[in-house]
Length: 381
Image 1 (cartoon, rainbow, N blue to C red):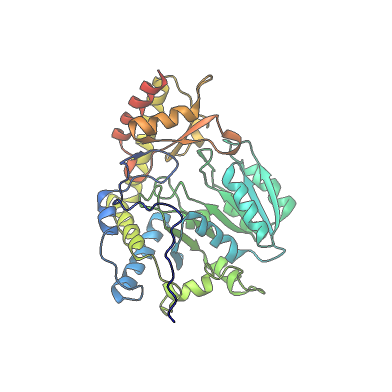
Image 2 (cartoon, helix red, strand yellow; image 1 turned 90 degrees about the vertical axis):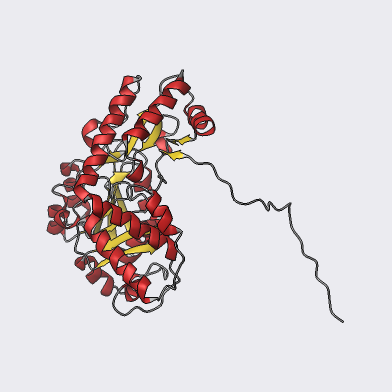
């Protein structure tokens, strides 16, 4: 006797074709993508071991080295968001008992502390108020006290809009035999970065901010020294998916299957990186700086103040102080609902105190500033 099974649905299914609003994304990310990037993402996929796709992977590696200003052989795009690339740096560099010194000046420094602890690190931290940065003397004193195996700094703190100066840090790391790890999630593509000149050993980023690509394929790089530590581990990397011993065989000359890559996301990333290279990385940095200065002047002209001291502000992300008596969440919601303009709210210690305004990648244009300031002025009335 054949048993008949019934099909159950827990709720009414929406069978309408997908329809989403067209927003101007001026929050902390994602940002809007160039039409050519979206067109590339729409291209029909090929197999993840197809020779044409493997060639595209090589192009992504070369382009990432260019925008990061590094010659690191192990430079890839992790299949995942920026947090996956962040975890990849920790998973591959940290062994149980390693002293890891982390500079915490915002939300994402705290995330590094949490991650490193989960991988068995002996975590030490130094802290600054949210919106400030570390001086070289403060880093030097902490290095002398803790003598860490790894120093982790957030170059671009997404929660505060502050940029950590890197000058002189690599000399300290060289003195103490320390690997230098930095977060460039909100700086890559829009802020000057010189990984090799700065002596950086591990870095990570994301695709959806300064690179102007949808989220899902995230840059990761390791220096020769970091690779040596990886190859000489006494324990296996505790994250199989992010183990660079395995991923290196897929991205390297061996081309050993590891996972099914998000083909179309890599199409988009390659096109986004190509557009930056076509513009020229220095021109890209200058464009971001010019447009953010226009943003600051425009916001100040309607009576708003910035949270971070000018010399330490990021050209990609600005924290704007919410005026006294103004409901920041209500303003942001009105911008979104009535004007299709997105800005971000504050995180952690800055919740309810600032808006986070991103001017990144394709969105770093005077027209973006004009649109935001115009509707913000109207809403604040």
